[in-house]
Image (tube, rainbow, N blue to C red; front, side):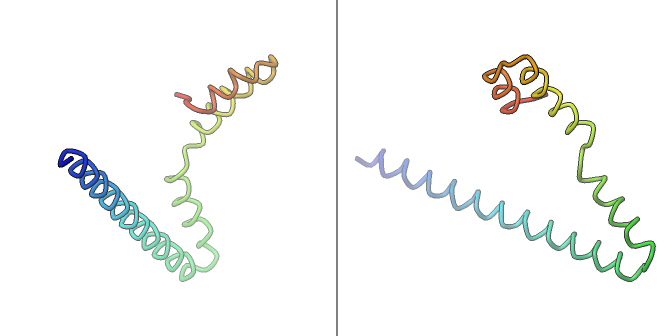
Length: 91
């Protein structure tokens, strides 16, 4: 039975470690967002430009369009299974 207990301990460590990494990344992202929002508020009418520039760095519009087209083609052909597969993993 010690091997099973060791596996459970390893799984718990992985879970806790993953949770800590996730919370850390969320905290850093929230902090960065707060800094950008504060900077934008100070800049007045130029604020939306700063926020837009920050958002453009976070979003891959080209990738989003490519992913949408990868799903749209099978949907247009009536192939729901292929559209589901394309939405699961597009590259």
